[in-house]
Structures are given as C-alpha cells and as structure tokens.
Amino acid sequence: MRVIAGKAKGHTLKCPKISRIRPTADRVREAVFSALASLGVEWSPTLDLYAGTGAMGIEALSRGAEEADFVERNATCCAIIKENLKATGFAEKGRVYRMEARKALCTLDRQYGLIFLDPPYAEDIESSVLPLLVASPLVGNETTIVVEHRNTTAPSETYGNFRMAKRLRHGDTCVSIFQSGGGAN
Image 1: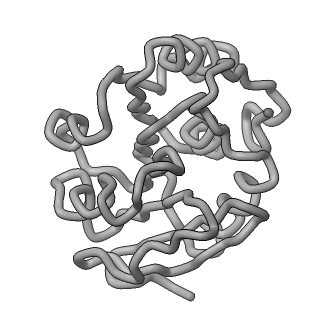
Image 2: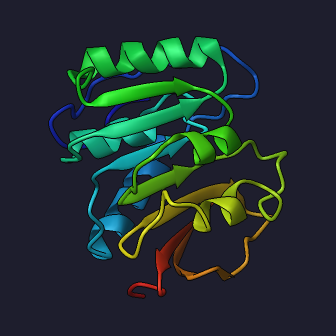
C-alpha cells in the first residue's frame, strides 16, 4: 500500500496485521481521488473515520489538505497511523483520536470539507454512523462524504441534505460520494 499522488507520492504505508482491517486498495483510492477532483472537492480539513491505516486521510494531506483528523478505535492502528504520518512528513498536520466513530461525532468540534467513512463491511450502512454524521455539526454546506462499502449493499440515495453525487464500483468494493444538495454528476 502506497501514497498515490502529491507530496508523499510513492511512500509505502504500514498496515497492521489485524483481520478486521481492510485497507482501501491503491486502485480504489486513486479512483476515489480522481472522482473527488472531477467534482471540485476541497480536501481540507479532512476527517478519516474508521481510519484503519490512515491511508485516505494521508492521501488527502499528500494532495494538499492542510490538516486531517483520524478516528480509529484500535490502539495498534492508531500507533500505525502516527507512524505513517511521520514517515510521510505529515505528523504536524494530522491528529489521531482513539475512539469509536459515534463518540467522535459528539467529541470533535469543527466542520470538515471532506469526510471518509469506511466502516467494517459487517456493519450495516443504514444503521452505521452515516445517518448520525449528516445531522451532526461536523458537516456543512460544502462537505463531501465518501462512504466505502461492499458492492452488495447500497446506501440510500439521500441522507438529510446530502445526495449521492457519484458511485464507483471496483470488484467487491463500492464507493458512494455524497454532497450537500447533490453536487455535480
């Protein structure tokens, strides 16, 4: 697993050997960021929920995000995210929070331009943190939410004021991109 583009392009990212961690494949990450660029998405500030290795947030930092917050409940993963931030030169731009994603919605106190949501595939999207996230103060009129999920489960087309702007499919992985008011198609 590596950083695809930007300042840290080519840097290898560490990945914990934990069965529940399913890092986003390089080709999927590349497709996601290409889609975000085509939608005119601002990278900063970025929130990486269910961060795992931190690959999505680090990719955003590499492509110009000024800062990123990483939320992950697993202590080993949090340590690896910190190592990956240091190895890519972004230690000063990233904050790592060891907590459940739901708790982060009540704890974090800023609005984000870009939010990555990659819950375990076993977690139902409809009952996941997504419906709570769109109603939280972490999102604003310019927020874009990227949800990675199994291709056999599709989230709703709308959540609150957020509408699906784009859906990407890569093998078993599907990525749905939501923007306030729907964004561009």
